[in-house]
Image (cartoon, rainbow, N blue to C red):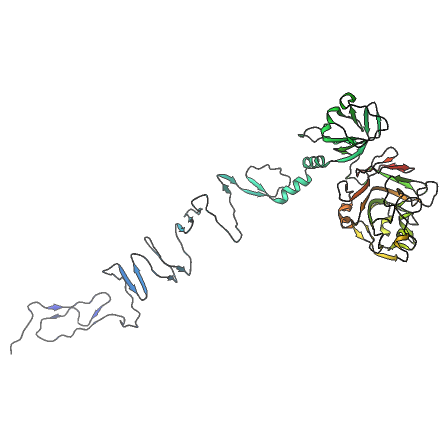
Length: 506
């Protein structure tokens, strides 16, 4: 039999990742040669196959359900570990990274742009109308620039001593500075000054007022007659005919009779509203007051209430006394103690009396502290019609009622047709033991119930100016410190005549 043989031998050599059973053995066809070619891992549909490199003849590579193509990833792409991309990476769907993303630069483009540079700087947005909302806190350790202006600090310096041009201040710093700066305090007090005064004398076309005018703080325009309104017997006086002058403690209004068309008479009542201030500071509890001796001293006013049934009123005043025994009325109407208030009438209990069997007692123990010889604020609402609605406050504290007496009738109450007397329950200076012992100031009368303002008028122990308060009917500040008139600062003209009470300054 003829034997066929190959002209050139067939030789199979094994290589990396592939094993050949007879590697390098020539096969020429003379005898059989079995070659087994194998790789070091299984290749089945369920095998885990690893390659050093995979090269596709097209631009698309299918890996399970994930397609890698020149256009990117058409579906979500999840990376459980590190992902290194040497060139650009485009993901058309979501990209979820379970660990860190490290990049020299990250640029996101949605409705606006945000860029994180490799230097650590960032850029949000690319136009001035871009809006960036942060729902949490933002911590920043460096400076900020707004439209090119650098801000490097949020300052809580309440004194503004640094005068920094690159710091913005807190609300607390501004409030503290405005509330406590002498500059602002002076200007605020000056702007708010608007008090009523009545001339103490009129002579030679000059009206004299016993009060300083408010000097304007530095950098503000000085006072002139335009800062005041003057009235002659209730008629407004024209500014063109007026000049003002300060003569030590007296404020002078000088009138040009030719320009105004008349001359002042000695009995004219000249009143003024404007930038007055007391000779003594209202921020000082001891700026001036009236002392009452408990024997004959009183102030008889021109204020009266109703000629029929007494009307409900609120009384507010500051009082100082150390008298622990019976201390008669702080105030009452007329000659028969109508609506008289006694601070310790019976066994040290305060009493408001409106008529026979129609009165209220308050608890002694709750007012005992008021007889320490120091100033205390008192506020009384007299509910005449029902009496049970009457209320008493001492230093902003409501005092408990001890006893109501309501067996009388409203129709039998004494009326308020006669003027109010301060310092006595009867308008008669010849009878002792009907008068108050102690010191009084800031006495005001309101219509209706104003006890909701007890805290405001107490003002943490500093007298509160009630000149512009609603329902004010009369207001005797008792700060003149001279003369025999306690002027009514409410503008109603209910001035009081001082009978025996003495001015005191500490």
